[in-house]
Length: 346
Ligand code: PEP
Ligand code: MN
Image (cartoon, rainbow, N blue to C red):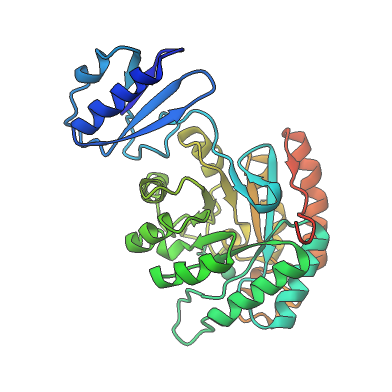
């Protein structure tokens, strides 16, 4: 429930609304806007008597958020959330942010080569998993904590920000020491103890859509993060399981404009996992930018034939450079701009 104050409502009137919400046993969240202040009532279980609030001085209207997710909805917040990262990088504004790198951190040479190549092509964020959720327990599981150190080294050398996955609440602690963005993977989208830990981590989170998750489920998972106090959430469309084995997943591009309609949170597209096929990544990345994605996440490996995970969907560095040239043009057509890389040491 959202209590919208009249333009020019006094501080005392706002405080009175907050006090009544707290008296009723709920949390109040004050949300100053450009035009007027709104106060969110958090944790509404449907029993709140709106008339107690409607009659208070300074209150213009009480809006009942109709969606099951509340704080992530557009009804709750009309302006788009801009997730601010170090170095002035902003996800959710007019910039389109390129995040690129290998599926997994494999060794120092591989991650540094990948970082230099994607930086050179114009990526802003280095992606790469130190902890890997793999379907088979016998597949490469990632380097673990030593992999995080290598990511930190790559950031130091290139100025790239780091996005890397945390798989469990302990991992959230380790990852947040190094990462600029904590990635929560598709398989973990509904791991609620992980969501709660990431919601308290004090770092931006990239939340990937689950393999068979509806958009309502994705937004409800994001709601866990906001409910824990973390408002810096970036959603990621990475494809959903389809019926056709021709592609690894079906990249749901409609999710991009639809999420923008339903929620104020930014959404990026991952056509690497969305297609599973190197040659299909480039056209689908172009399409994602055209559809309004706030960023693209692309797997790039210095030598995909030797990759320890997801080689078949990883671009060669020169393919990524070509893609970046193309999306620069497409971004401009839709009134956006590809974000500039952060200078080293910024
Ligand atoms: C990844 O980003 O490498 C990954 C494991 O992605 P997803 O969680 O979308 O499968
Ligand atoms: Mn991968």
